[in-house]
Every structure is written in structure tokens, then in C-alpha cells.
Image (cartoon, one colour):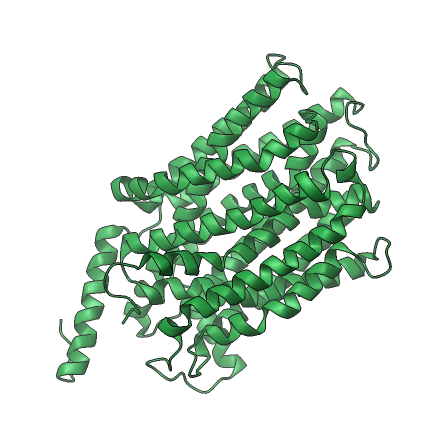
Length: 478
């Protein structure tokens, strides 16, 4: 039975979502700043940096399903998830600081970057997988699950955008400062504090609701059993369809985020004020998304909302680049260029986040489908699967950006306003071509997701009746 059977209290929505701030801190750092920092500031080759990051993500992605299965099988008086949320944040904060201020003060070796990136990713998973796995445990309602994910995404974006605001306004307030190392150490310390506050604060705020022994004691822990459960979970047809669509969507997101500072600096030639506006535009687009995604799901369902939003986000997001190549764009660096680009960015990002919320919320419905077929729940395994897909894909997206930058011939000491036009054209063409293919692939598969509202609600009723039959009379109710 879910922890909450009636309307979700507003306090619970807020405090549960608050835990996702840590994910936003990480995502902002890895997606927007890390490649630029190690490439343009510390002088490492962009292709080698992106290779280290993608391999670290692949290692972590393999570990994630194990963490999810361990979370499902944790059996304590504090429940299945809370012990992880109290144990992981402090070591995560320590290694997060090290990532942004290498102990030697210089660029680490390739293996050094790879190693610390792996540790950061694994510890972040130990926070996020148990936290997000609480969603289908808290409620079985189709729309309330979307509501919880709206708050998670809002909080995650708020954390990430707060880090961007602090970076652009305080730590690296000018284009020149963005290419110097001084502000990055303070950036890392501030992010570490925010990670601890959000994860521990969210866990403590939900403690009274979820801190009790699970209803069913898991079977004895064996690694063979864990991997058997993971294989069973990943064999669920709905999960495989979801995974194909989500994989492409996450690759596109990772590529778009990691290339943003490159195009903002060298294509659109943002000055200090324009850079400061970037996180503000993103923040307001997420606020609008918060009010748009619920009505979309109620009218069209999650699969259609995800598919059409993916296509629309791609079209809107690439329009400025197409106009730039066609010579129909205002002079980059000017007020007209900046304002027009931000208008397109506002709607493209809003639609992109609708796609991500829709896709993530779909996983909650797979939990009951799996329970109906296998007779047990596996929230941790499925949301670890989500992280597996997301991390592999985000790593590939960052890797693609590194390869795009390297293939286009952008120098590691590039100066704003002096990059040759053919280099910029190649960056745009490579990026745009990849974005089109990924959006169409994602829309096709997410639109084919087989679980809609009616099927989910019928399944929840059947499982509830079966559970009541077991309790009342020892027989299953058909």
C-alpha cells in the first residue's frame, strides 16, 4: 500500500522535491561547466576530457542498478531508502570540492579526472536513486506521481540554476573570469554545501512518513540474486520501449547543455550581462513548464506529451542556428541577437523539460506492471535503470560535444570574436544534425510507450483488490 492514500500534502511535495536540488547542482556542473573548465581553463584536450567523463558515466551506470537493487532490499526500522540518504551526502560533498579544485593545483592526469568523476557519480546515485524510488511508494495515483516529479524537476532545476547564477554573478562574473580558475574552487565549495543541505534536509522532512520497517522482508542478499532481479526488471517490455526513447532524449540534453557555453561565448558572443541572463531565462521557462505539464498529461497522456514536446523543442531550439547560417540573424553580441535567442531558448527549454518529466514519470507506471507479472515491487531497480540510461546518454552527449569541438577545430585558447567563421559553421552543423536525429528517434519510441492512464488505473485497482483479498480472506479477488 502507498504511504499516502488521499491528496498529497503540500509540505510533502515541497520537501520531497527539495532532495533533487543535489542532482541539479551536479547536473549544472557536469553539463555546463566541467568540460569548459578542464579544457579551456586547465588546458586539457576537449576530446580526452569528454572521453574521461563518458567512461566514468558508463562505469557508474553499471553500478547504478546494483545500488537500486540494494536500496530495494534494505530492511531497517528507517525503511528502505532513508539510510542511504543519510549516509551518502557528506562523502559526496568532499569529492565534489576536489573535482573543482584538483589537489595539485594543476590539471590532473587523465586517470585522475576519470577516477574522481566515477566517485562523484556513484555517490550522487546513492543519494538520487533511493530518493526518486520513493515516488511510487508515496502514491499510486497517475496524476499525483506527475505532481511529485514536477516538484522534483522544479527543485533540480532551481538547484542547477542557482549554481549558474552564482557562477555568472559571483564566482565567474565576466567572460574572461569564466576562462580562469579562481572562481571554480568557491563554486565547488558552495555546491558541496547545497548538496548536503538538500539531501539530508529532504530525508529528515520525510522521516516520519517513511521511517518504518518495510511490509515485506526481502530474501537474503546475494549478488547473484541482485543481478537476476536487475535482468528481470530490465526485461520488462514497457521499460525497454521507454529506454530507447529516453536514451535519445538524454543524449540530446547532455549534448545541448555541454555545448551551451561554447556557443554562447563563440557563436552568440554573449557579454557579461547576457551570460547573467542565461540562468534567469532557463528558470522562468521551467516555472512555465511547471504549470503546463499537468494539463498536457491530463489531456494527451504522458507518451504523446513526451513525443510531441521532443519534436517541438528540437524545431524551436535549432531555428536560431538555421537563421544564423542563412545570414538572416542579427549581429551576434548585439541586443537584438541576444533578446531573440533567449526568446527561442525559453520555449525550447520549456518543451524539453516537459519531455523529460513525462519520460521520468512513465517509469512509475512500470512498477505496477512488473508487480502484476512478478508479484513483487522493484522501484529501486527501475529508477536505477533510469539512471543507467540517463548517465550513459548524458555521457554520450558530453562526449559528442567534445568530439564536435575537436572536429570543428576550435583551439583550446580560443578568444571570443576571433574564432574563424568555418569553425563556427562546423560546430553548428554537427550539433544541429545530431539534434534532429536524436529528437526524431526519441519521439518515435516515447510515443509508443504502452501504458496509458486507463491501463494503469485498472492495474492499480486490481492489485489493491488482490491485496485486500489476501488480508481479509486469504484468497485472491479477481
